[in-house]
Length: 145
Image (cartoon, rainbow, N blue to C red):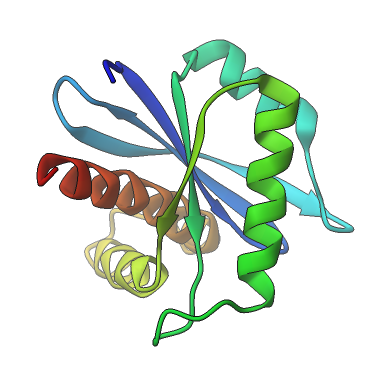
């Protein structure tokens, strides 16, 4: 599969972190945060992002338990992935994100300590960095295949 642009989502019950990646350079960067209200993402916001970036593949973080089992958020992330595919007719892949949020929090806390991030931006930054880690994980997994 030849791809240029990937978009990843770290789905949460209040916010969805979004990141963009380029396969040519195998790089990913945090992009945005989308609000979730009453279990519904801000579809207009998502549509604007997709229209602007034209991703060829959507990656959704699949939150599994430490031993790889499903949990309530796994079901919600799968539902979100299905809705994205249905609305935008783009290929969607689920990516194991077991430790992405923990790693993202460590990265963001370090940036905050170094004065590179406002306190008010921490939660959104964690979600966005987690999404970029989902892309990086996908790159790492596809490089070995």
